[in-house]
Structures are given as C-alpha cells and as structure tokens.
Amino acid sequence: MAVAVNYRKVALLAVLALVVVFRRPVLAAVLPFLVAFVLAHLIDPAVNSLQRRLRFPRPVATSVTLVLLVVVVGGALVWVATNVYNELLDLATLLPAHQRTAMRVANDLLQSIEELFQSVPEEVTAYLRESLNSLSQGFMEFVANLTNRLLGTVAALPSAAAIWVIIMLATYFFSTDRETVNNTLLRLAPAHWRPRIADARDKVLVDLGGFLRAQVVMLFISTTIAAVGLVLIGTRYWMVLSLILGILDVIPVLGPGLLLFPWAGISLFLGNLPQAVQLVGIFLVMFAARNLLQAKVLGDSVGMHPLLMLIALWVGIVVFGVYGILIGPILAIIAKALANAGIIPLPGRDG
Image 1 (cartoon, rainbow, N blue to C red):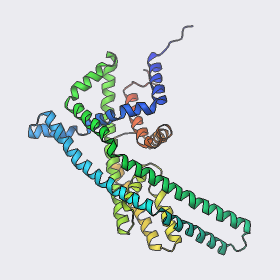
Image 2 (spheres, rainbow, N blue to C red):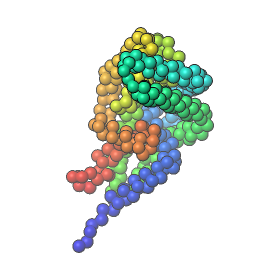
Image 3 (cartoon, rainbow, N blue to C red):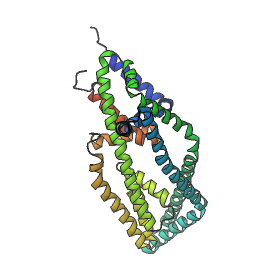
Image 4 (cartoon, rainbow, N blue to C red):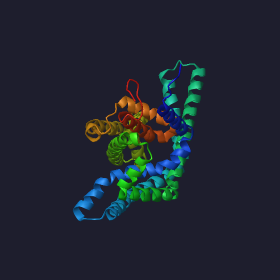
C-alpha cells in the first residue's frame, strides 16, 4: 500500500532540525536583520506621523526617527552602562572585604545554632561549620564570576558598534522600502502560500511588537521602583542591583523575591531590622505594581496562555542558554502566528 508523504511537513521538520543543530551560527547571522525588521515595524507609526504631519518624504522621516532613537535611547544606555561598569569595578575591588564579612556572618550563624542547641554533637557542629564555610565560599565565587562576566559584557559593548550599525542600516532600508521588501520576500514563497505567509507576517509583527513594547515598559517600571527604593535606603550598588531586580521581575516565576528575601533575611540576622523591613517593602511595591499594571500594559497583545509562555521560556533557556529568556517567547509568538495562519499543521486541523 502506497504511503502518502506530506512534503510540507517533512520540509518544515528538516528546516527546524537544521536550525536547532546550527542554532548559534544561524542566530548570529539572522538576528541583526530580525531585530531590524521588528524595529522598522515599531518605528512605523512615528515615520508615518512625520510623513503625514510635516510632509517629510519617507526616507527623511525614517532618518529623523532613527537619529532621535539613537540619541535618546543610545544616550540613556551609555549613561547606564557607564555607571554600571563603575559600580562593578568598585564591587570587584571590595570583594575580599565582602568575603570576610560573609565568613563572619556564617560563623556568627553557627555560633547562634550552637547556643540554641547546646546538646548538638561535635560531629554535627563540625559538619555545619564546614557546610556554611563552603556555602559562603561558593557564593562569593559566584558573585566574583558574575561580576567578571558583567564587566566583560559592559566592556564589550563598544566593540558591538558594528552590529548596531548594521541593525540601523537594515532598519532604514526595511522602513523606507517596506512594500518592496515585503513583496520581494513573499515572492520567494510558492504562490498558494503567499496569502497565509502575509497573514502570519502581520500577526507576528503585531504580537511581537506588543510583547516587546510591554516587556520594555514593565522592565522600566520595575527597575525604576527598585532604583528609587534602593537609593532611599542608601544602598551602595543601587544601579546594578535595580537592573537585576527589574530583570528578575520580568522573568516569570522567579521575581525580585529571589534576591530581596535572602537579603532581608541576612539583614534581620545581623540585627538590621529597619533594612529588612525596607527590603520587604520594596518587594511589596514591585509586586503590587506588576499585578496592577501588567494586565493594562500587556493586555491581549500576545493572546497566549501564561503556561505556554513559561514552557517557551524554559525551552528557550535549555536550547539557547540565558538568551533563551527572550528568544523562547519570541519563537513561541512566531509559532503561534504560523499555526493560526495554517502554515504549521496542528493536530485536528486539516492542512
């Protein structure tokens, strides 16, 4: 009996397999142009407004929009990166002192345990002391490695200027020749697929634009709340910590409590009750702001169940590493648009 072969499914699976196997070079080659394509869509309202209100030709409107974007956003990023770099240098210099403090805290904790349980055998006490010392040492090594990685990342930003130039140039061409680019890309597909691909493209741009815009807004709000709170309580490395807290607040499940609760616990153990209360207060304000504003900011821009987003996030981390935090949800949005357009066959749906 002859077996019917669905060549479309075979081709899709083959392409997906190749992308997974060669994900790093494929991502490095394609990512700047994907970023430019999405960025061109995001600046499109501003470009259209300049065309309509000031009668600018589209190339001029695009150029003005990109220059303003580079000046405002680029200036803000340079200021943040400079301050973060200085704080990280300061932290790296003082790491030995922080390590001694951590060892002292660990010994004080062990002494408190010994006083609380005076009948604890010496073997248990020795084991606890060794475990606490190992934990303290491991934590400080983690902080040192993280600091060095962050320093390397911030220091490498100027060398990434060539990539940003490519992104800006590609954004300019995607925006000025939008119709030509779209039609050229569509002509690469078989004629009977073009309506579906055009529909999927529009859905991807709308959903992806809404998702990225919402995440940037929520990241800005969370980071600002954390920064204000940390400055008010006199935290030394407030900019680095507020960025970490803002990123944690955007990541599903984790949240800023991953950093704030242990910090508050250590402050409480050291007898600094006001700081512990203040740190918990920062968490409560961030938690309330996210729950009050998230629905309004995100709305139905993506229309994807949070569980699916969480799965996409985890799969992205497993496949792409830390960059999967962003890549996973983006690929899920693209897959959803392709499925809704009928390009990716789903069980129970005729393709």
